[in-house]
Length: 126
Length: 130
Image 1 (cartoon, chains in turn orange, yellow):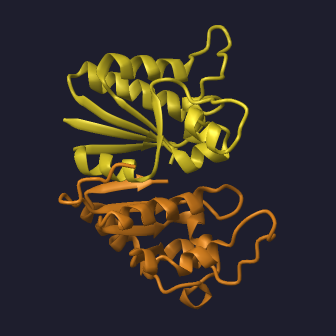
Image 2 (cartoon, each protein chain N blue to C red):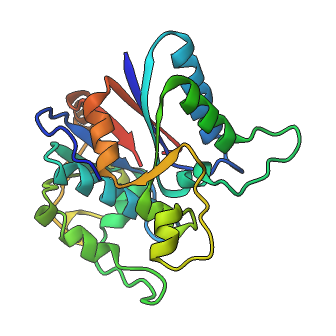
């Protein structure tokens, strides 16, 4: 793998809209966010809609079929992904609040969501 | 303007890879540059050499290859997505003692760093199938 030009930095918003485990999408979004962080790009990970379920604590996937997303989420900060946001309306609609989440996230209402999309150079929905 | 694309769904059974291909053709027709198409997750099925398109249906792996040859577009499939899905080049086939290679000519396997680099080098990066 050739190394990207790290002189240029473009902020990227990685958006996850899919619930964990039914598809690999949530895991893929986390992998993408970690890759941008590994190359020193400012990255924010945003969970929208069903995507917020990926943040719930107490995940127990069948061990032989799927790795725990919760464990992976716990390593985000170690990989340089420090900005994790969740759609506050989507959390409330699913009966979740900040205490039910596996890691500290920023809750974003409609105004904050608009700001997030505006503030980044790149938006990638994974 | 310099564009790159992120393609995330299979070439068959879902429309988004077709949309990505048509977008690629349209931007090139307008005189823009397509720097790289990065195939991720199920998107790596776009890079198979072992498909046979049904008559009357688009053969997307062949179309991508043709587009890349004509316009010098970089076609990169995510290596970890590809290994899981049976898309391997000669080197990976040998390394993992697999019976055959399956990556179409004109594509290369590499890591997510190539997506990051595309984001840095391009004016716009668009995702399809997200």
